[in-house]
Amino acid sequence: MKAHKPAVVVFECVLLFVVLLVAGEWIGSTFFHLYSPSSEHESVVLREYSARPVIESFAVPYSIEMGEGVSSAAGSKFVTNERTIDSTFAVKTDHSLSFMNAMSEDVAAQFIRKGATIVATRVGPQGEYQLAYRDGTSAGSVVCFPLADVQSPNQFPTVGTQKVRSHIVISEKWFPREMDAIRASTQPQ
Image 1: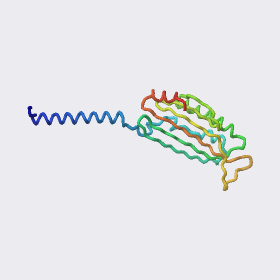
Image 2: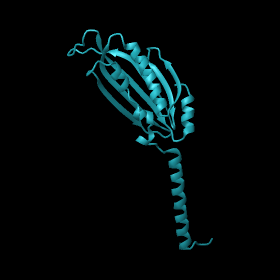
Image 3: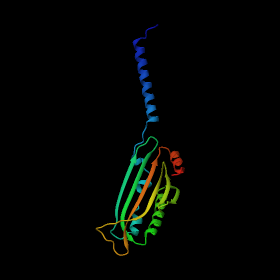
Image 4: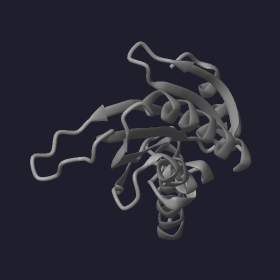
């Protein structure tokens, strides 16, 4: 058996190290890569949709209280984003149905104006308006829940008005490839 020269052994060790490093990088990026939440992984419609114009058109002046929240989660195949919009305001007693109609029309119009493709719309069993959409590499849905009465012991609405709560949830998945978003938007939700 021949003895290896020290230079050959060092070269073989370096070569083995490089091969293991490249293989490890490939395995890690292929099987263990996580897409992190960021504004780059949110659609324009998720970031820019505003319920305020419709709410202001129905609300009694100076009665609007609005709150919003956004949450995101990393994933190996997609990033999940969710935005909630909660508003409390006073409205004329008989305007709940007209509010829901106006809200559903406005959601669809704003999403189309921002470049989203409406995949499906429907009214759920409790009267909630649901819209499925795709925007580039994102696929998602919007749910506008019916107005709910708010009981407030400190505030008494004027005659013919009631205090209500509007709740809207926008949920979407961002994919690195548009084909994955198209596939996700065609699957039943």
